Image 1 (cartoon, one colour):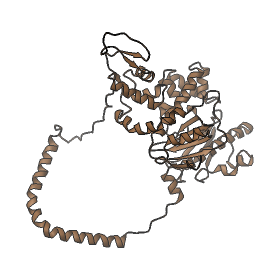
Image 2: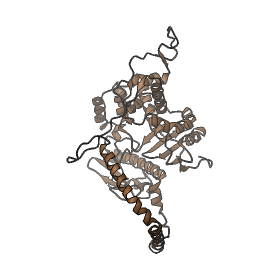
Image 3: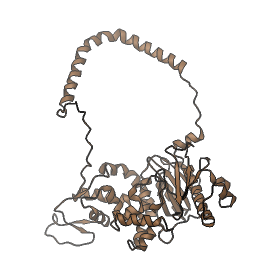
Image 4: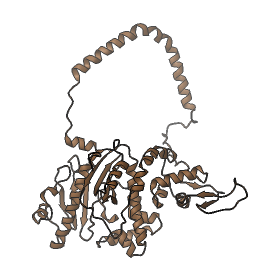
Length: 443
């Protein structure tokens, strides 16, 4: 990145589409880490093309196996069988699905691309958050299955996506709502000429994006499932759904709300009757107190106001510590979600995992301490501490290993811990932090 766009900063000053324009335009290679309201995502770039996207708190539906099930490419039982086979094979889940004949090479490439784009859209609508870009010479990726994504069309739409995020949330307030088709409506694809007697009658012509979304609406899929199942950028999917609603082809009922539980001894009354009665009682009480308040206000009100003001000033001068405590660097990192420290931790975790694989292949065992990897020149000494300069906690298990970063607070057992686990025969390069535990078998 250049001085014009800092290596790290805040999204309110530099939205994601501006960062993408800089990376793609200058054909940079590296990892962009973006921390927003409810997630932290990492976007990997090779010569300006996106080759990977990871979410620290990924939804289950974004995982490759679940996407295959949502799109009807295979069943949940078949995915579960592939995950079991993966425990003894060094093959990615997508490659195993191709070998089993569930999906083709083209379908796998589309799934991986859609998986990245769903994560990308999450970061593009954030208005608050921080980012950090770590450049490097090259980024490894699965060249056999993955087709790098050119984001030029996406970041050019960036300003429109950024501005329309609030409008889209107003039109589609709940992703759990199930869109339904309106009966009695005829539609035709774009470019099809349909004859009719008058200009007021006849089928409605759909664009390609609208047609894809309309096909997925069957009265059972929620809005979220429609977005996950269509081979479109999510922003285009949502705009197409709103267009269908405006055209009268689709209705979007509100998701059912949970009713507030009523106490056992609370009598059930008609809505508004009880509140109206209580409100009238309060008004009556206030009316009887107005004359008394009017007589007391000129004298007592002024005395109480002056006394209260003097007391507040004295209390503030005596009791309040007016010195401003200095925040420690670790406190500042915790407040800003520290994308830089997370990226460094991920890099070092990948290096440790790769070193553990090599050590196991040559010694048929895992090391007792991480320092053995340093002694064997598999990693350098600085790799055994995380991005917050806390030593990684390593535990050698009976059938595998566990590597733990204690996170920003440096305390084991807290919510910000990052745990990576592995077993002999199921090594997967690349670490994932969907929550606090890494599940590498999800592909």
